Amino acid sequence: MRFSSRVDISEPNPIAKAEAAAKTAGETLVKLNDSNPTRHALAPAMVPDVYSADPRGQRYAREALSTFLNTRGAARCSADDLYILSSTSEAYSWLIKLLCDAGDAVLAPKPGYPLIESIASLECVDMIEYQQRFDGSWYIDVAELKAALEGADGGRIRALVLINPNNPTGSYVKPSEREAIVGLCREHDVAIIADEVFYDYDLEPFDGNARLAGETGALTFALDGFSKMLAAPHAKVGWIQVSGPAEEVAEAKRRLDVIADDYLPMSEIVAKRIPELLQAAPTQTERVRERVRGNLAALHDMLDSDGQGLVSVLRAEGGWNVLLRVPSVIDENELVLRMIERHGVSGQPGYFFDMTSNGYLAISLLPEPDDFRRNVRVVVDTVDELIG
Image (spheres, rainbow, N blue to C red):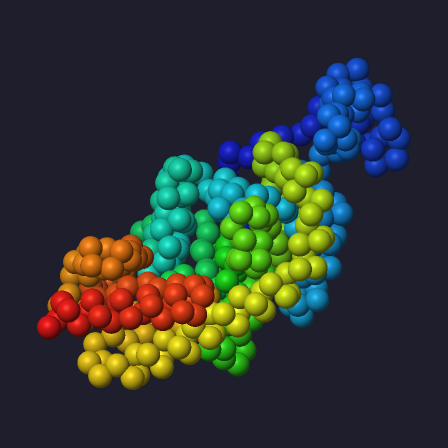
């Protein structure tokens, strides 16, 4: 695996080596340059604790997180394989720094949320899209991935992003796709970045569905966090779980430690709540799961009973957003603008997610049931108006 050249992993100086040896031996050194005010009785009363930086995130928080992750039945996760940070967006940024030099590239799915392209651009890295295609359900065009990795840009592709399940298509990575993709990444020394923030919200599950977290066949960085797990975007806690071949994992963590140390760990104020929030996670996730499944069932009922039959919903396997299909003769901008004008309702058309053709609208399954039904009614009525 080739890592970026922008992470400085040069040999530590003799003083740093001696300090590390003393720490390993359990010896506490007095430091003349200790400028941590919390160790000198200067911490404010509202935040009285002594600050003890752990670049990967506070140990107790990582231990609690690993225990929680191990209860989900996935591959075993050690606290030493986890990095806690503020969000999965920050995780993408760290991993692009780890893997890519300026001018390198990452592969990411389309249709898809535009976040990855924006973050890659901020890191002076290109995003090369690969297509998810629909034939009654969504699938990854593995042949296209193979062609990209073996084509003119293959030498600068350093990571492949898998969204499991994807937003807004709601498609999980299928077992056969996973096997082929892991093999391609291993063959081409490309790391996998697996974004699994929506994983727990299965809508139409299938046999063999599994997380990529813990994958050992290729260097894999699995992303998750509280934003979706707790349905709390203001609870800014995300994490990276590192797995793969042992030597590559060790080298990746050695370099990722440098990045984490430069950016400093998550706030202790936030970290202290992580164990408590993890206890609440199963109940909260189930609450959200019931809401989105109920609204999806209501959506199918409403569309099936609509006499005009102009609006349909594409099959979604997971997540909390789905795509509506509307007649392609309707311009997507015209549809949303008409909804704003007539009903005070806005939305995200398919082109926001780089759908390859006109005639799509994303709709959230999160609203309270009465509000959700009202939203669906607005879409159906507006389509009828435009066609009629």
